[in-house]
Image (tube, rainbow, N blue to C red; front, side, top):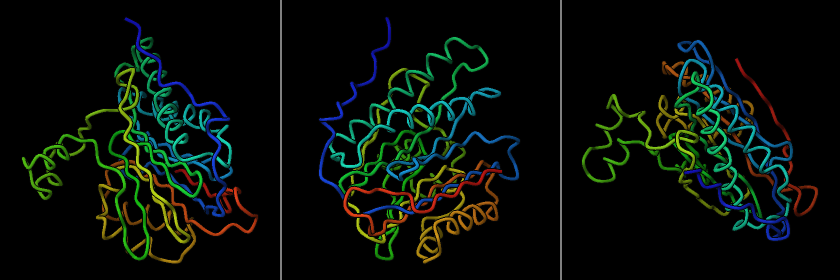
Amino acid sequence: MEPEPPSSRPSRDAVAGRPSPLQLEIAERSVTGPVRSHNEDVAFASHDGSFFGVCDGMGGARGGEVASAMAADLIRAELAEVPSNACPEALASLVDHAIGVAALAIHARAGKEVSLSGMGTTATVAAIAGGELVIGHVGDSRAYLFRGGRLTQLTRDQTMVELMVERGQMTREEAEASPYRNVILQAVGTQPQVDVELVRVALREDDVILVCSDGLAGSLSNDAIERIVESPASVAELCDVLIDRAIEAESTDNVTCVVARVVRSAQGPGMWTSLKTWWGRS
C-alpha cells in the first residue's frame, strides 16, 4: 500500500491574515562539539525572519546528516512562500504540512538507499504570523520562550522517559539519569507519516525564543538557560554563550541553537525582518 501524502497545503489566499508591528533579531549556530566526528544537526532561518528551526538527524554512517539536511531544505522550501500577513491558523497547517512533506521524502529515500535505511531526524520549527508564534515539533529538540524574567519550555520531549514521567512511572530525576533518556518515540522520516505537535503563543515585544538540539538542552538545566538568555546581549552573543556553556558542561553531542528576540518594527505592520542573522558552524 502506498503511503498517504501529507495534508494538503493551504492556498495563498486562505493564509492571509492581519499584519503585525513586530519583527525579529535572529542568530543561529551549530557546532560538532568535542566528542562527535561529524555534525548531524542543522539550524536554519529564513532571510526575512518569518521562520526558523533545528533538525537533529540520526541513523547509519551518514544517514543522520542526510536526514537533517533534507528536512531543513524541504521545510524551508515549503514555508518560503508564506506571505508576511499570514494568519496563525493557516500557518499552523502549513508547518504541519511542511514537516509531513519532509517525513515522506526522507522515508522514500531511505527505502531506496541501503546505507540510509532507518534514517530520521527531529524537527522543531518556529514560524511567525499575525503577532503569534507557531511551533511544529517532532522528537526531542526543544523550543523555549523567555518572557518577563522567566523561561518556559514550549515543547514536550517525545521520548520514552518523558512518557513514563507523565504516567507516573518514573520521577523527573530518574528520567534525567536514565540511559534511555534519548530514545525518541517518533522521528521525521522513520515512517512515511508523522504526528506533529503544534503549539501557538501570542508574542510580545522583548520576548526571546530559543530552539535547540538535545546537545544543548541535555547539557544545561532550564535554570541555567534562563540565566543566560535573560542577558540584554545580542542574539549572536547569546548563541555563543549557550554553545560554550553546553560544551563546558561536557556535552557529548552536536550542539545547535537558534535565538530570536522580538522587537518593535520601524518599518510598519507586516514587516517581519531578520535584523541581524549570524551563522556559525564548526
